[in-house]
Length: 500
Image (cartoon, rainbow, N blue to C red; front, side, top):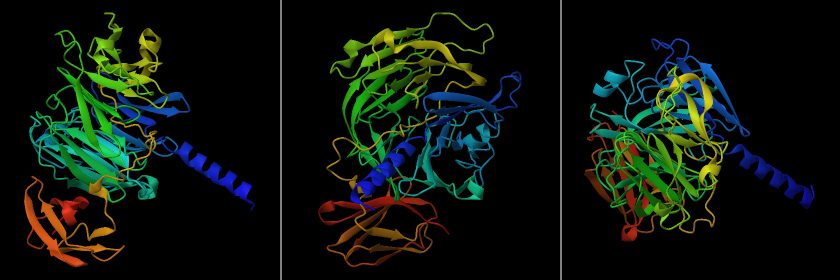
């Protein structure tokens, strides 16, 4: 093979790989259970499939209400699995092997998951991501609530292996606690790391200005990096939404009474430059909210039930550009199957923004969100669905986002910078071994172990490798560990599961 042929084939290979990436967000699941009384003709699930700029909708029998759903597709854009917080369901819309009791049993689970029509949890309390560099391995990051007031919450992860059960997938780890030391109430979202491979997962703390930032890489979940004062408004609650811009450099968070936007560094995972979003919060439109960014990341759209405002984010004082591009016309569908108003929004793989009315059989569409004002081309009830939906679109990040340009110069976040260190076995019963497969220990390390409430329960100074840490007397649960080098440099961090 000559050099020219080799370079052509290499380029073709790389191009093919790039084209195959980014379709994980091409399958959306909406709907109410087929058993819903009073809506026999319109109950059931709606599957939305995006393919090369076109959209196809189909109806299927569904087990539960998809009120705060998350879904994931394969490299071809075909549905793999999805969840609403109660169970994990495969592409055949059946409960996946070991997929029952997501978030376990308990007061809230028993109250809501026992009834197929009721809704578990809050808004955006779950996201599904592919585990970097691990083919056909996926992770669900989800929130478990203890009481109906949602005032006590745990962040957990569940892993799925799509190589199992004949390609239908199986849950291989479930409900593993991620210690974080706070209270969250939804508004979970994610964006790709500036290295183009890993992922940032972010949540605002309930009723504070703190943000929890986690990193997902090939080694698993790391963090959180707890960022104080990462905002100028307390964490949102109730009806609303949080999203990253399509280029990952901006973050917006709105609820029915407030909104704010921040800048985000995809290389370091740091928030900065918080600013209030100036929106109209009158009594007529303050019961619901949503937010989305245009595919070119220039325009931000904020919904307030009866209006949608457009903001030009290229302007420093973006609030001065606020323009109502959609106002409810007061016309209702007499069948009540195409509902009024504007709730959550999602920028789709066809570069359009879809907007949920509440309890409707249709979605509104902004056809040209990259355009200013009326040229954004809004269409009321532009997409007719085969079934009604609850008013919430699935929590899906921008899978088409690649590496930052310019490239990251800081490397991966130091919480995930393992530098060859391993913690094994994990899960562990009696002990773990700390080792380094790249080199011998060049200086003393500090190992810290925290319980699920963020309390430091163990600290060890490591003078030589490999090093054994005894765990026999510790309770069986999830712990968070960190390894520090000289000068307090974070060498590694992650979740350690202690079993009996």
